[in-house]
Each structure stands twice: as C-alpha cells, then as structure tokens.
Amino acid sequence: MRTLNSGYVVKLGLGLMLISVMVYLAWRTLANPPDSKLVKADNEFGFRILKELLKKDPGKNILISPAGLALDLQLAYNGASGRTRHDMAKALRLEGMSLGEINRANGRLTRMLENPNPGVKMDIANSILTGKGVRFRPEFLKTNERYYKVKVSNLGTSKPDGTLALVSASRFDAQWMYKLDKSEYDHLPFRHRDQDWNDVEAVSSFGVFRFRSSVSGGPKIIRLPYVNRHTSMYLLDSYAEVLDARSREKWMSEMRQTVVTVCIPVWTTEYAADLGSSLKALGIDLSSDAAKTDFGKMCLQPFNVTGIQHSARVEVREGGDRPAPQQRSAYPQAFLANHPFFFAIRDDRTGLILFMGWVADPTEGLKPSD
Image 1: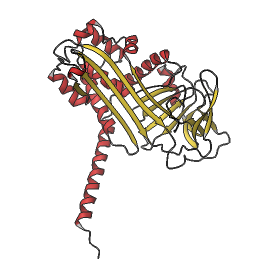
Image 2 (image 1 turned 30 degrees about the vertical axis):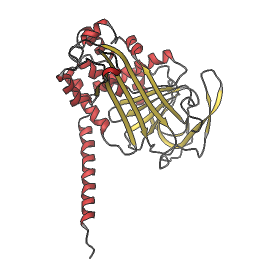
Image 3 (image 1 turned 180 degrees about the vertical axis):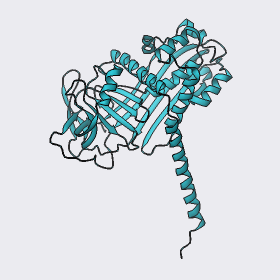
Image 4 (image 1 turned 60 degrees about the horizontal axis):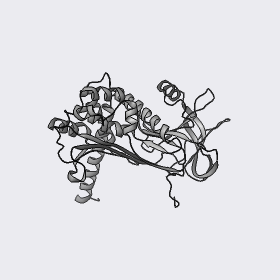
C-alpha cells in the first residue's frame, strides 16, 4: 500500500487552508455587500463626472473609475465641515446617509475589491499627498485605516508647504469567460467622429449573450462576462440617454439571453486628468477659501488643495478559454461596435460600476506594435 509522505500532506493542508480562506472571504462579501444606497450614489456620481469630461474632450477616449474616485473623496468627506461638507454630500449623492453608514459601506466595498478573483484583477491605489507642515488628526487616520486603506504620505520639501492633493489611480485586467478572438473578424471598419472610416483591429464571438436590441428605441446593449462570472463589461452603441437613471434601469431589465454575433475593437484606454474643474462644475470646490478651513476634522491646520488627480487604465484584447453557449436561432442579432461607444465594467453582485468610459477612437491608446 502506498503511503503519503509528510511533504505532500503539508502541501495538501496548505492548499485546503487557502481554499477555505478564499471561500470565507467570498462568503463574507456576499453576506455583507456594500449598501445599495452607496452603490447608487457612486454610480450616479460617475455618470455626472463623465458627462463633464465629455464636454471638454468629446473626441477623446475617456475613462474613470467611479468606485475608486468615490472612495478617495468620501474619505476626505470624513474630514469636512460647514459649506464644504454640505456641497460634497450633495455632489456625491450622500444626502440622507449618516457618516457611519457611509464608512461601513465603504469598508465592505474595500474588502470586496481586495478579494482574490482568479483571472480578474482590479487595483485601486488611492493616496493623499501633503507638503511640509500638514498634520492629520488621529481620529481621521483611524477611520482611514479601518475603512478606506488610502495611503497617506508627507512629501516634505518635494511639495509646497501647507498643501494637499488627492490622488486616485485604478487599473483593471481580466480574462473573458467566453472566447473573443480573431477567428471570424480580425478587423472592423470604424467610423470616427469626423465621419472617416478606418479599419481597426477587432475580436469577435458568436453565441448566447445577455442582450438588448434597439427595436423599441434606445441603445443596443451587450453583456460580456469575465471569467469570475460576477464581473462583466457592458457595451452600449449610443450614449445620448445613458445619463438618465430610469432609462438605464429600464434598459437593463429588458436584456435577454439572445443569439448574437458580437464584434468589438481591440483597445487600450489609459486616462489621466485633474478633476478639479469638473468637480467644481458639480458643486465641489476644494480650492475655495472656505475649503481651506472646512477640513478641520482632517488636519490640525488649514491647507490648500492643489489637485484632485485621477487616472484609470483598461485594456480590451482577445482571450477566453471556451466558446459562448450555442443555440439555434432563425433571427440572430448583431452587435458591432463600429462607431464611438460607451462601456462600463460592473460588479453584477452589487450593481456597482467599477469603470466607465467613452471610446471615440480605438487606436488612440495602442502602440504601433499592438
């Protein structure tokens, strides 16, 4: 009879322990999801910021992470008072939520985003950078450590004295659940804003996807799931009405399992911007004279906010290890992303939009070798 050696037993035990930890983390997230009110607030805030950015650069690719940006700003909200606190609550859609509710919901959100997901990786690197002479209140740092995990750094002489900047950086990388490859269509004619048509590199698939047709008005929408099953990319072939929450809810409810030929460009969007002016348009002006003294719950002395930096990166390429489910259909649908389009990466367990963006030119972020 074969006997198990001690090394194998140890490896097996460690493997089972790791699986148990992963199962527990997943269970804890599902048992304690982020508050639905906060999810709705973060999503609405994201659409409003995207709208402001589109006004400035309608012909450029734009990408934001509502989840990542909201975490940074809502931590700062903990330190605000007076007019600044009122304006932030209104712009961030936090009215009617207590600070305790907001922090606990963000703590659950932070844990959810940290959970290991094979094939899906989301990195949120938020930070608060200060110059010499800025000292944080211990209570604020405790709140950050417990719920937000934002990196707080004093840059000393490399940043002007008495200044503070919020920095939010989010990155996403994931494998598709179903194959999107170049076997059927490797290029797609794409109509740019100036009406010129150019061939762009593309990937495609055929099978059953959740889909909404445009027969009854509104956009075509397709859901492309990632390998972890609860994170998906949604593509909309138009953007005109997407800012209306009721329309979005209605459209999502009209998605059905449908046989679809889907063809989308290969693209990479790496976007960075100072959001100070866009936030000001929504009612948040952290550079105002009032804001200098309204953050007494954050720091021990007044400071100047010198920037609200946000960057995000999403790459779309071929991948997937199995074909989409197949089904006979006399009238298969088609989703061809052959003109500027909107997309969102969504956590389907909670409805939280992790990333959203506008692709005006799929070739914008690609290097010649891509």
